[in-house]
Image (cartoon, rainbow, N blue to C red; front, top):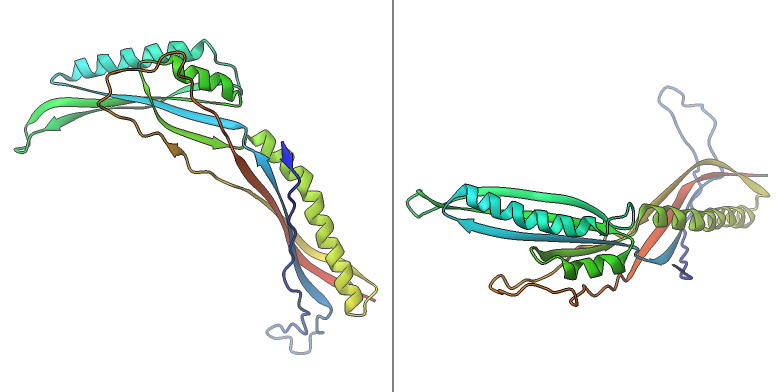
Length: 238
């Protein structure tokens, strides 16, 4: 949902008095050129939730660790696939590692491994409920972001405002410098959005209990900011 929080700014404008070129000392001076910049931004509610589940296992035997990890991952993956819907709740496997454990003398005395399952989508309620239904893995991290569709929609809506601000300031400076109008020489339009840091979920690795279906993950996405910047130069005209 777009929030009515628009900010606009412009950099100081300056007139280019003259431009010289090597080997062309008598080239005509470039006058009446103004460099401008404007921007517009809007706050939007983040609509994409990403949850990474994981677990670790240790054993004296590598095959045992691998089998335990596969069993835990398969159970979680089967549970997640029941609710999977493209764009709304997407499921993918993450890192799967297996490594030897050494003694102080450099001798292998066991094996340890880890596995990961990543669930992402716009249906935050379904993902939150799924977090309580997956019992073989625990939550490693949670992150909120803007979907590509929402980001592009927001950029389209505020681009017009940033461009209108650029043109208005160009016309205003033309008037202040005694010109009647302007022509755009060059212009660049760039966009940016907030990139949130994943929220780490601190887990007690010593805990023996696992979450149940009534322990759904609380969902509170918060806000993100989408900005569009317009910069360039204009030629003031008589």
